[in-house]
Image (cartoon, rainbow, N blue to C red; front, side, top):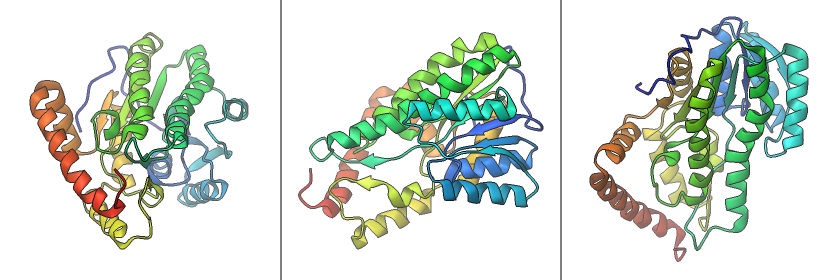
Length: 296
């Protein structure tokens, strides 16, 4: 894994005894991060919109000998709910040392197919949700004066112009922009920032992603999902990369060599990047439109 350092003044971070707050902890990357961080001695504060899945993660962590100090379900789209969550979290553990914005949702589609609700949901969950967390958790980290780390999980769709990802990218590119500013703004407070941009990851999101205009029960969709999983990283593999990024104070954390290559091409050889994206777009449209029928 390669990446950019946030800057001098933020030292190497270990996890033993660190207060770690994780959104989306009910499963996928968030659940894997909870288990991995707890195994390294972190004190966990967890949230997810699904109370049952959140409880299951807490049970697994505790059964393995980890420490979960506090769990509470919350919809990160709701600023007041996040404010109440922060108050309860701080009452139980004080200011956090590490805050991880992991929760997210996905929907794909063309401009003709996407409805307003898709655009709004992608922005509310994937951008405003992390902003609500940043608003309510980071100032107390600053005031505590202990330094810390902020992790924002974006996506390959926060770096690249992937086909049918316009609504999803609206939130993920936005989170990338927030992170790019905060990596410098928070440096004086010794708070590092990591922007995580995974490629394909085999999480429950794979089963729930909405492809607008496509019947999820269509056998062709099942074949697409199986093909996706062949190239996907596991949540645990991503969690290992993220924690290593935090430990080493990496800004940009890649979990896919393909995405790393494409991003490097985008920066170093824009004409080649444009050709690659056009080729990918044509291939994706052939596959997806064959499934979606007349949706264009």
